[in-house]
Image (tube, rainbow, N blue to C red):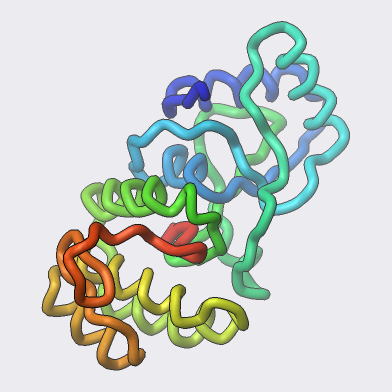
Length: 209
């Protein structure tokens, strides 16, 4: 499956911008948002949006696809982010005239499928290298926002975040939050205290984006 670099995403959005006759806005989430705004380098296979595309944007995207210049663009399958998330969206500045591209604040979360979780962790690591996250803010926002939103697989969510903390801030910090949340202590390359490589479960971060 083809994956697109930041340069390819920007070129596509600029081509789309040219086809619009009036201002339209899209809210981009996931890996594409991290790549466009927050310094992630991992190529992405599509541009996920928080909601349905405006008709003019959809028509322009389909025209580019028909011309062999498209990038998959459309609503993400599953998105759980805080109710006031829209108030914390930020505009991506890439020289567009009519298309407004907005992305969530880097500390907003969403649900992900298991198959995408490992790539998410890589994206978040790259974001952290570009601009380090605050451990205190990350934990506080998780506990006050995302943890209360998810009713299924809450333990898996907490374990994933503990693994994220261990990855970004070290095993000692990961152990602290794991004990605090009553989940297995994450270790480098293992899960739940055994030697098997850790595979992120069905819920992980969207973006500490």
